[in-house]
Length: 330
Image (cartoon, rainbow, N blue to C red):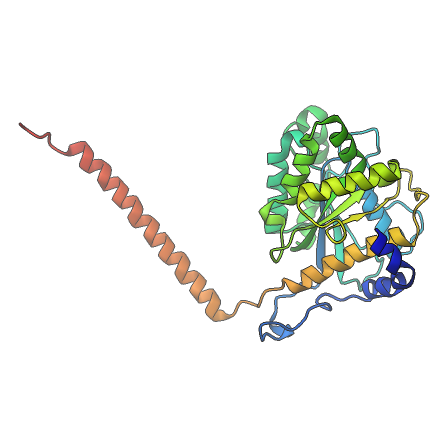
């Protein structure tokens, strides 16, 4: 935070201008002797927000609109509120936070993960990272029938999500509630912290061998000392640098109100986090597949099928051999 306080007054407008005028692939640097036109660059870079329930993902989206889109205090994403532990984001939501049709990136708000159902939540994250995400894509979990969520999803027009473009996820941000982290460390019940680490260290969420960016929200609910100590503890627990691996951002409240400390430092922290996400995304673009690559892929698939078939035959005849093998006489 001290580093951000030093550069924020002069660097905020410049960094914000780079994001407003950003086009997909603008931060790419020539490496490996491959030209930019030979890379598989999507028309829009997609940043995925992932975290536990009530971690502040939707509040972070509203803060992005306020800082990057200059939209004031209009809440575009519905938040769950501090008193509820149920996620309101049942459908995936695509947000163009700079509020421009020419924007080169978008942010996806996702359903929060439950500490008691981390396996199901991590499976969802794996699906999003590998298969992509769509606007209005439903996300149902075990137990939704009891809460009535699954019925509401089926009764809605969620089938229209197939009409929206599928977005390949280029970078992920892990959002965590710093106030809940402080509570967990103080009580000794580290289950929420362990769940955050399981998500943060999940292999499929990493890009270019880099850990996702950690966003800490709701730190304004703590005293200055507790806030600093909790930030240091969670960064040490995750194995990342406190100065460059995590961003402490006080987001909009559920009423769409800015906290008292929503100054240039908070705005710069948010802007730099998005900027770093785009830099990581543009560094991870892969070369386009050529016709020869598709041929090799097809040949490899055929050879794999043949190998599996012969392995099946070998196992089958091995069982018959043991079954009909005559007994040995003394």
